[in-house]
Length: 324
Ligand code: FDA
Image (tube, rainbow, N blue to C red):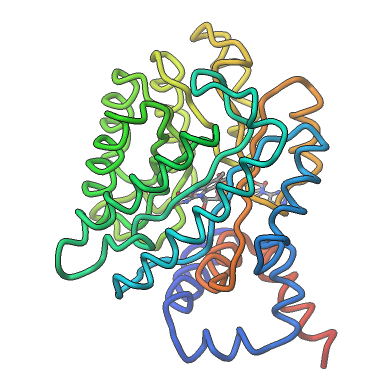
């Protein structure tokens, strides 16, 4: 069943995540909105601040993503920067940022997609994305919030690594995301580990060809554990982004093997997924960060979550049927 889902349903769902007509139909449905709320706390800044307050009250850290991707107009990228600045100003008014120094682990972080900041623009896309990301990092530095740069499809990874490397020159705390399904990632992990970077390791959420990525679940998990061992053995700060019990259960052993304490790395999971496990890890004294997306552009993010797991898709379909 898992194989059928991975090889048949998942590619269709990921293709649907890029289909405009389907997007409009899904966005108009009130049932969808109800299901979306499980993964995205809301459209507005107030919605996300409420979610942040609840997560912080339960001892969890947060990273916040203002939803948007593949922007093709420079003005739209500028508007997204403005939203991040508004978000950072609001986070800066929270009590935990006032005493924070950039050398400590920051409980508050924002996550950026470079394609939302102009990377895909035909003219000077990389340069514009770097400038926009820099504006966000400058404000984040002022208010005591971390920034991590998300990883998107494989055609953007060289550009993303180069931009996040440039940002780290002025802001050494900027985090980078790598995806264990890509064949290149063990080598990228060795480079980033040697540089002492903050690195979020995830499996990868895009529909990549076999020429660049493992497609079988077991190979992706094996690659994940190999990459994590490299990151944990290095001087940087690994961020273990996964809900997979096979990975979560392996972490304490890897930490012992590489001499990491619970302060040397953190777990990360997505908002609305395995909430009980998130609480268990935080209550046990681990650093646990939750990725909280917000904003009106939730369609692509939501479809990738449905594509990840039969149970997520079933939950959505059941809600649709109950409505009829
Ligand atoms: P996977 O989806 O393979 O699930 C494995 C197992 O976990 C399941 O079989 C089940 O046992 C358990 N599980 C999963 N969901 C569950 C649920 N809802 N309830 C109960 N059990 C569940 N991707 C990307 O390409 N670029 C990026 O920048 C990011 N950023 C990112 C940040 C963070 C914080 C996270 C957690 C993830 C990302 N991702 C990402 C997404 C990532 O690449 C991946 O698609 C998802 O995390 C799913 O992969 P998992 O490792 O969770 O395992």
